[in-house]
Every structure is written in C-alpha cells, then in structure tokens.
Length: 398
Image (cartoon, rainbow, N blue to C red; front, side, top):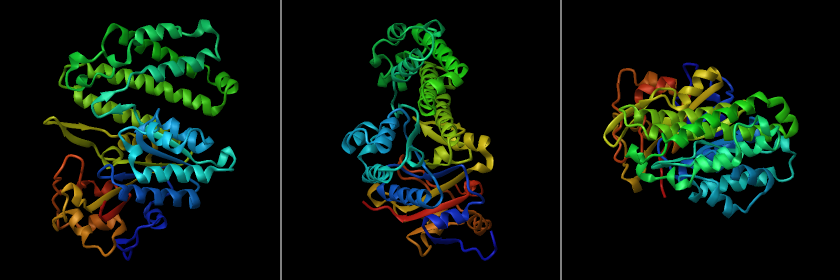
C-alpha cells in the first residue's frame, strides 16, 4: 500500500476489494460473534457487490452442508417455500435471522429467469454438527449408495442398501447428546461403526474410480453432490469415532476434524469457481485457532488455515471487528485495545487497511480485549499481519 493510503474508509464493496492484494478464488469474511443481523447485513451487502461487479456466483455459510442443499435447490429452481427453506435449510438456528431470510429471498429473485450457468448458488460448508451432538451418517451414506446403485453394476457395490440400514440402526444411537461429554455413550467405535467406515471408504473409492462414467450418466452437478455425500459420510464416521475416544487428544481431534470437514467443503466449492465465504473469524483466520472447552484449552488449525495452505494467494481473509453489543454486555472497548483504537474512527462501518493498522500499533503493543461472554471473540492483535483487510462495525444494535 502507498504511504498515503488512509487507515480506514467508509465500508462498501469497492473499498474492501481495493484493500486485497489480488482477486482471490475464495474470499472469506469472518465475524467475531454469531447471530447478529447487523453483521449479517454487512455480509449481504458485500455479497451483492461481488455478484453485480466481480462475477461471483456462490456464497458459502457456516451451516450444515447437507441442509444447505435445501437452500440451494430453492434459490436455483424454486423448490419449496421460503418459510420451509428457512426452517429446514439451516442448522444452529440460523434460519431464524432476518438477514439470512433476506439473503435467500434476494438470491431466488436474482435467479428468476436466468440460465443455469448464471444462477447464484448457496452452500453450507460446516459438517452436520451441532454444539452438543453430531448427526447420524444415514443421509450421507444412503444418498451416496443410492447414486452409485442407480449407475454402476450391482456386483461393484461393497454392500446393499439393506446392509447399510442394518449397520446404521436407529439414528438416536448416533445423536445421543450425552456422548459429547461422555465417550462411553458414543456408538462411534462399535463393531457396526467400524464396518460402516470401511464401507464408506469403499463407496467413495468407487465414486472416484468411475468418475467419467458417472458424470456422463448423470451430470457434473449430480456427481458433485455425490462427492459431498461421500466427504460427509466419511467425515461424520471419523468424528463419531473420536467422540468414543477417551484419550487426552479427544477434544482437540474433534474440533480439528470439524474444521477439516469445513476446509474440504470449501476447497471443493473453490474448484467450481470464485466463492464468497462467511463464518466465524476463528474458523477462517490463517493463524492457529484456540478456545477453552469445559476448562480445557484447545488449539487446532482452522478451515481458513487449511485452505490457505492449499490455495495460497487465491485465499483472502477479511476479519470483522466490532465496538459494542450492549444487549450482550459488550460495552465500549478500552482505548488500549485494537477495538478501542478502531472505535475512535469517524466511520460507523469502516473498511480498514490492516497493514497500516499493524504499523500504527507497533509501539503501542495493545492488549487483547477481554470477552465478557463465551459467544464473542475479540481480535488478537498478533493476527493483524495475517489479515488481508478488516471490517469494523462500531455498534451492533437490536
């Protein structure tokens, strides 16, 4: 950046893009907390700009990748009503937020009457994982098996649909909430789960081996969806296996596996073309991620770090920082923090040059801002050099 580049300018799409060193294949916008429409409105505004001026066609959100197919079917073809999609197409309660509803409505309206090649696409990039439970692998496994069974000779399949159903058993065996804290309550290392992992691996291998035939017999889009089922099935079975582990590595492996599933989904999406990604800063940053869970400190490489290792300059990370969320007890930031310095800027919503900001803070050595509640993660000043840009929102108000 030139020396006369301002530290910040009012937020809009062009301002953010001017701060990036290049046009990335995967542009990630992080947020420091979930569930605030003010931050989601910033995301929506940037996505509209990317669609209208930068040629983007895909947005990926931190929500269940399988449920996200419901949203994608709606925005691309009109399947289902908007109410049904908001209820069934999102995990973590994200369907309740007005800004998410507006995003889906706008995408559907934008796609109306356009050819398939120009339609916007929606994707969830998280696994089918809630905070206290993991989904049964039934949907992913049976969908993958069904796709293959309709297109390859039966003798090539490693098992029948009936065998899968028998090994899976009731779904509530897999979704037992107590298993998150008690490995003994998990089914993940039962004999049936072990056999399912081998079968899932064989099904994914068959999908890869028959790629030319399968794409010709279906379509690139259907094959791509089958690959998603395969990634999700193997990822879920691996996750359940570690839920049943009682070693000190258990929690670290679980958070790492979740982000590995996220990264695999993002890399698959990036192979189709430019993608705009929105999720928590912790998942999308280039640096190692960390948190405390039940008093245990955890560190792992997040999805952004994993994707960055593969894509290099084709990955860009724009973090979001905020001043106040008064309804959550987050008041004005102390002046000796990054957020405190940004709070003194003239803009209510700003695009910030992180290289200038890091240079400004060289002598000040600001302290990390303390979080008054678990759902909010302030910026770590040490991470500023690894951000391509920063968006600052002064006040989040409901």
